[in-house]
Image (cartoon, rainbow, N blue to C red):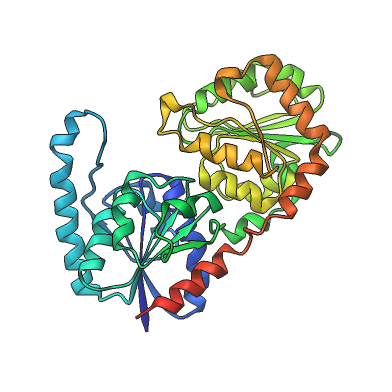
Length: 354
């Protein structure tokens, strides 16, 4: 049986695309093993799928001063030694990496053992972890056309991002039932992501009464951000985090407000949902969300509202504008070519399995 090692972790965005690939790889006859950090978010998600999981030491490589810069290189070296032992023990035929710093020692160890490595870059420009990995990669799958110029020409493949099939299986009726909504108003879904949700949460709640005049509102507010004082608000439903409910919530939704993480916006693209993107500002990130959002705005997929420009009035105006122009946004989303990512990546894995 062919064996593949999947790796990636640190955030959900480094795990869920791997999860999306798993059913197709199983159908193709692969034995799937996963390498992640000892106790990262990826461990729980992957073990719930019944996939064998191998934890390794993981450290972050930073371009700025941090006391951990003195200890983390030793964690990376330990992770590399553990990865090398796993390559010897598991003898994979190929490695697929979704990125994050836990993937760096895995990719480098596989390359040293002459095992083909395919990596995926979600953002418009490669992050530091993937910059380290690209020289060791056989092929690099890119989410955006613009990413191709940052990757050696003979390695770059335009694939888009794998999207979990279950996200397409939701029921609008079930989504409305879960929220206690009727079908007399369009539904606005707001999600802030795992980073920087506070600014979006505050903007939404400060303007909630005005929004509820036209919309029912679903709010994915993030862990620890649930507001009990708003529980009785008619037409407003909060979730700290949605998992099994998420496909139904998406199906019930007519318009989405989101951060501009690559995985999140690719899900919006695949689901053909008109959306407003509020990217993390450069002061809180390396600027990748700003680039992702600009690319989607240029393609006509999204309306972009910068956080520093976000006021009560500007948010309400953006919501009204996108809802009024929703058919134009849906048409642009329908015309996107980046909708068969799982097949593109699975075919590539099969082609390069040694």
